Amino acid sequence: MEQTRLTRRGSLIRFGGFLFGLLGWKAGAGAGPSAVESGAISCVLAPEQTEGPYYIEGEKLRRDITEGRPGVPLLLRLRVVDASTCKPIRGAAVDIWHADALGVYSGFGSGSGNRTFMRGIQRTDATGLARFRSVWPGWYRGRTVHIHVKVHVGGNVVHTGQLYFPDAVTDAVFRRKPYSRRGKRTTRNANDFVFAEGGKRSLLSIRKSGTAYVASITMGVHRS
Ligand code: FE
Image (cartoon, rainbow, N blue to C red):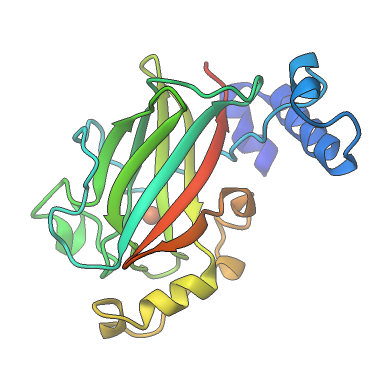
C-alpha cells in the first residue's frame, strides 16, 4: 500500500532509500552527519498520506489561523528539510488545514459559511521552520485527531501528509471545554486507517508552554 502511494512521486527508489536510511540509523553503523554527506544514509522521508476530501487551495498567508475560534492554544513548529541532504529548505510554503475544536472543517458541512478558518500557509525561514498559531483540532467521525499538511517548493507540491498527536495528550485536552461538550471520539491513532500507513513517523512532539501546547515535527521531503 505504502509503495503504491509513493509511486505518485515516481519513487520506489526513494522508498528504498528511506528504508535504507532507517536501518542505517537503527544499526548505528556509520550514522551521523558524515554518513549523510557521504550519501550512506538520508533523513527520514515524511510519509505521503491522502489529502482527504477537505482541501481548499490558495489559502491565506498567515500565522494565526483560528479567526478567534475557541480551543486549547496550539503553537505549531513545522520544519522542512531536504530528505537527501538533511539541510533545511528555506522558502517552502507549508500549507495546513484541520477541523476546529468541534470537529468542523471550514467550507464543509456546518462550516460551509466560511472557507478559511483553521487553514493557512506559512513560508519556512532559513532554518526550514514554519510557525502557526492554532488550537488543538477536534475530532470527526471515523478519524483520529490530525492536521493535514502540504509542502510546496518552487510552486510544486512536494509533500502531502497528515500530522498526529499522542492520544494521551489529546485525552487530557478533550476533558476541557469546548471539546468536552461532545461525546467520546470514535477513533484513536491505533484504529485509524490512515494512521496505520506510516502515521507513527508523523507524530508531533508535544510540550507545554504556559497555557498552550507546542507541537513540533521535522518533515523530510524531496525538492522535486
Ligand atoms: Fe481530515
